[in-house]
Image (cartoon, rainbow, N blue to C red; front, top):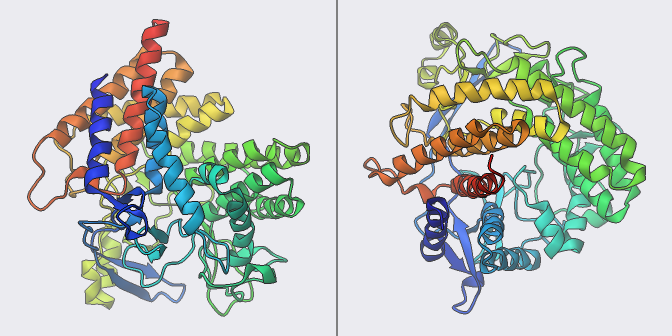
Length: 505
């Protein structure tokens, strides 16, 4: 067994021994791997409205839970993959049993929504939803990590209901498909009415829209439900209509002031809308499983290709090694935007003259390969990996060339690291995990051995860092919510190395 497999095996055993809970709190309940609540570092956020007034609020870091009770859905793919590469079926069976338990207890009877996503988790002891981070109330908000395929296998009827219920939960104005990024539990989806009144101050993120297309496409692929196909078509039309004709970028959200009659698209693009593009490609894979979905599959695949090319071209400054936080839709860096942080010290100085408390707000021009926003506990830059994944899924030579250029810069930046944390005290291993997966994709696409060597270098670097004593006051790495990213990357690397030895490449 390779060192990588030993590391993953030991880590899974640690989680079973030290981060698991019995279902329902019963001594004979099945063991479920759990995870601490998602959190952020303490920071003061800021925004600037059209009226020129700055608004801010303090977000306080939440302490880690020493004995967490939140079901870790993101560990399921790790368990599946560990069984695949070792031939030991017990790990896959653990994932099956946890998913089956979630299927029995993890869906609300009133709405049909699951206790999962970006703003709710499942309490395996009390068999109820719990809020994420510092929120007072669990809310339902789609997330790219929701294991839809696994849940389809274990609880198909409940998943089918949930994927239709989100329409009534999130969509507030069916005729224009206006929606909010989250909704409350407790509504009755059988009424087939919006759970929330239209509000122009709602925020309709592009990532949420893309995930809805994916989810409805998944429902259509498995059931042939024409209503889900129509919803997916309408959402694809909504976002396709605002995609920039030249840059390929899309607005980060629809939304406006609360007194407006509509939710207009905003003239601001995020520097990393790649998760939305990948969700669209996943949707296309689902839609084309039935002839009636072929045209929409081609449509959303085209939107995703243009968006990924736009991200690869405009969202990274190679001279500064920075992914600017905000862009104009034509690809230019958006200097004047004030959201969460100030872009420049000059912006901050002006604001502090109006309100001294804004001295607490950070200046942040954008992410790096191993640097993230001041609120982040760990660095997770999805753009490089998603560009490479897009190149793989689409067979796109332009995306491949962009991914290769990003990979070269990744390795240079990785060479500057000296420990498990960057200068801002943020974990680096989740970023390296993403880059390991990126290198494996590039190895498959180019047949060049150097990319596997680079993946191994990144893996060995992070394992060396994690083997050292942690700084005082820092938790063990395996307590963090993103721990599964590293374990998955190590398993994929092991599999790729075994395949390379067999083929001689």
